[in-house]
Picture 1 (cartoon, rainbow, N blue to C red):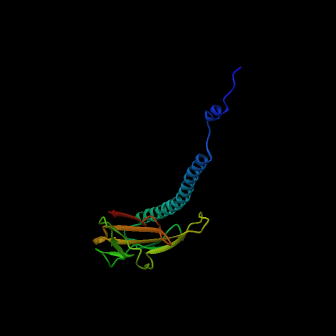
Picture 2 (cartoon, one colour):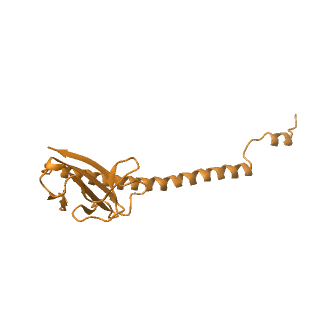
Picture 3 (cartoon, rainbow, N blue to C red):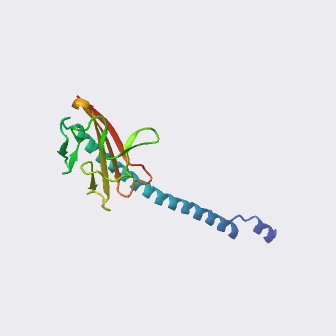
Length: 176
């Protein structure tokens, strides 16, 4: 009979050492920590996207109502119960209402750094938002001479800001 060499059989065994197991655990821990941080970031961005989408829908809804008014109308009550001013008969050829600014890409947008103007802004609370989010809606109106048309710039944002997004701005024109 042959005798087994115990030293040789121990050396041929395969497995993980304690150091290898510790390194593998550390790598797994770092990976799980990175994924956990991504979850928090995605929850934040999802909330910001919801706020931005709500602001867009609100601005589009108001703009649709503005466009649907007679060009000779200068006030009306919207579907939310707000009295909205759509320019005035004495001012043509310039914007009236909320202050506007020129953006970096040369578009005219509502300037939310300025105060609100009565009749050209309102605050709306989202009834579907569990946190009770409130939105700031503002607009400016440019009336063409002879009542031939109007240009509307409508801006909306969540109160407290739309970080990381800019306020929503929509611009349209209506002519006879």
